[in-house]
Image (cartoon, rainbow over all chains, first blue to last red; front, side, top):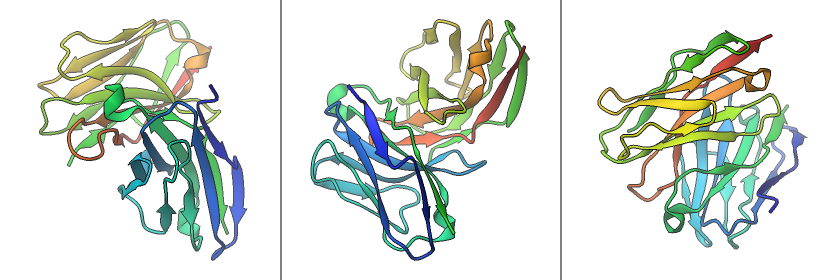
Length: 115
Length: 117
């Protein structure tokens, strides 16, 4: 199993550009989520999904869109990048209710810089 | 709303010694899950240990153990026989099985642990 994979590992954007951060998992997990990590603030939840076709907002959703068309993939879209979105982004997945456990498994992260 | 607090931004320990990282949390729920994640310089988030609130026995994973005090809402991590590879940022996290986002993790701000040779 590859676990949770994320691409790209690094990205530099100019203000106003758009891009998609890719996330995939091969563990057949129901639950997937996106977090951002900023210095001194821990990880904060952006969006999450409890299954294909179902998404919802987390703590800091503004400026980001998500969709979940398959169990495996959960891309995060930045429609118009802003310097405030400079951060490290983590995708995570977990078995959810069906698995009976609640830990999550994280991808390697994407470091995004918006200039 | 649930919150997680780590009051030690940085700590240092000598190799082979024992260190304890503190975490407190706030919740009104009776059942929940607590985790410690390790983030080394590679940036990868690695699950170290987890504790289910309804279990009174403290979780242990090799050199890592927790002191779970439910009434005090405290969840500290003890690392025994510290090794250089333990140098990392450590995050305490909370998850509740109630509500729609059953896997939602709430993180503390982290403790940066440096193991000195």
